[in-house]
Image (cartoon, rainbow, N blue to C red; front, side, top):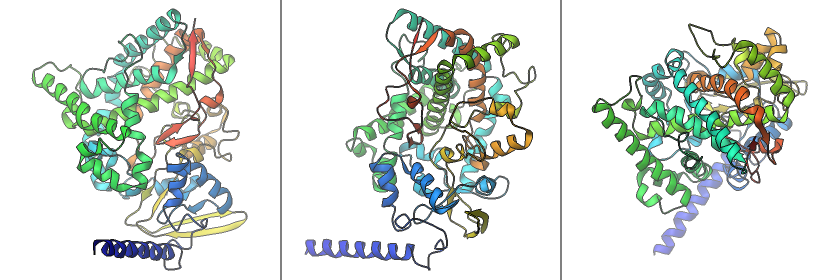
Length: 496
């Protein structure tokens, strides 16, 4: 009897999936008019093949789709991917226009699901973000400048000390992640993790971050596993070593740090500069530290590689910094020395932060797309509730906006006129855009502005790449952040 019931239920499920697949490609579906490949609109398994089996390569497949089918493509049964910078502000709108996130790509599990980054509903995200805005405002971040300067000096001292005393090459992204982890953890908890003060580069937060990110494509394809992690963490720890690390960091280690910070605050031991731990528990802290660690560390790594790979560019930068007396007059000092003009403050397109596509949903609006493809005019009406998004890995290599986009050419921002600069800025989405734009953008820029001059003048002239090529920093696949080829041994350097 039980076997018959199981067979009956299995048959019903298969019939339901077949009917759904037929409806997805039928004229009755609201997205039927949108151009698409044959398999993508039928099932989510097409996306799972590229992300789960091939390993985070659906963005590359999306780019191939655009080359064949045009600027608007239906990439799975529910979602559109758009490759037209003129439509950017429609997707990532601001003001009173509501934009929700897509549940399908809300991939984090554990306590981080209660964090701002996991809020799907526009109003819920706005509520959670409103409590954090003041802590990441430009005025508040300037108060961290002295702490960042001190950590930058410690980073340079440690790089020189370890590099000159050891013949072993240094893995830059690991070193820089220690630095960026200390910046954001010091702000969250009132004191840094201490990764820069320790003798070596291990331990660091990269292992915890790896535990957060590696199950993402599994959760995307099998949402039930994500539900198990959320509802039964003690059981989830036995599913997979990667999930075990996620549960331990999110449910045990991060809350312990929050409780420690709370006890110190209540005992009157908190620093004069306010920490933000009193507003969130472990999940929010986990999301802040995860977002603030690998992104800025990878940007520093890529910039360092290109400066070492092109000594002429490093010499030019050093000359310009010497002329501004950069070590005694930091680039970020509002009210004393203004930030560089906006057109100079953007990194070049290859320096991605989040490479995963970032879809948004307009729950209350019909949106109309107008464009052209191969001399053919296109007009699509996008119904409310439709996920639609862009990918930075596609936007940032739009050759009509960024000619010769792959080489590292920061001077493209100085050579462009105002009209071209506006086009390039419209196309840039390294921090996303609109109401869901990255909260820590000012902190990221401050960290880069303060640290890069110190590195360029103190450490980079003594640094040489070690068995490292441009392939070791080139984008290969997504794991929320851009990841190079799996065979890479990292960006390694020796220091004399």
